[in-house]
Length: 431
Image (cartoon, rainbow, N blue to C red; front, side, top):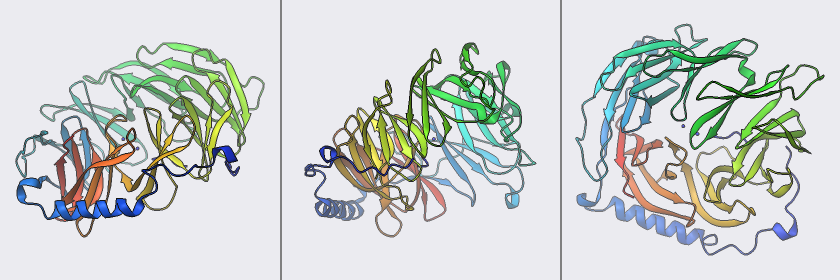
């Protein structure tokens, strides 16, 4: 699941918005570094009763791990990375209990197609896998029985799911015509479908599930579809009389925001496609929700927080890239080449700094609302891990994973990282 690619936001913050004296948790980088160094030394040197041994899973060269529910799925490469790949299912260690050091696979099955697996998800008793076909220019989605690994069905397209519905999209190459269809996860039967061009397809998410399909074609009406029923909710030509052209489109909560050129944002209500506001804002790279506001991310970095009702700029800052939002707090970082970045917490309503969390790499997680976890190297073959709490502004529940080398991902109660012995390590997280 994460990974935002960060117009021109060169306006300096006004004097009233300039940062006040740093709060207590902001101005103590040396003390924080000393505390973390002490934690590393203490945990690494602790007796065996205080060190959690990981569950180990084989990781052949080129293997791809995917956490899903209470399983780890490993896509293993074929011979010379050219043959069919295997999908291997493993149980996750249970919280508070130590399972086998090297658990036996629940099952192993051969996947159709070739090349890297791009997604694995669980839904309604099946494991849905998407990867390229033999030719490599199109994609194939296959579903396997969760209990046995037996192939249930396969069909062309890329799977998308954020909850109860499974959507499969075909025709992903620019200039082609494809379809978005909802399929029955158990059988692969098409429940409804709609023709699309790949550039026109956008999804609206609510509560971690896809609930709307929005089609913004180069020419003709914009359409909003309900992904559950396949019913078209609204259709309106928002560019009547204009020359055909594709434009950027972003679904942010109940707004559809279009970018007809590089310096204009036009917002419509998603329910009625009624025009709400239009503003000039050059070089916008992306739009995301920031608590009750809409954040426009500059192509070269920076945030401009907009009032969703009017488009008015509530606050702006040229430094930050937003990474997450929880309970009115924003987790931000300054864009840079390194995956380990200085993480800061802002108040989403005002943009004011609340706390510094230190330097961390934000770990990929299964679901948006899963706990935020940060990692960083803590010496040779050691990784320091912490829970990042935006409410308290603290990096806590510190631990050291001995033998870990990085490339981690997190589930609700487990952390997976690559290891120096060529395995994947699974560490239960105590919360």
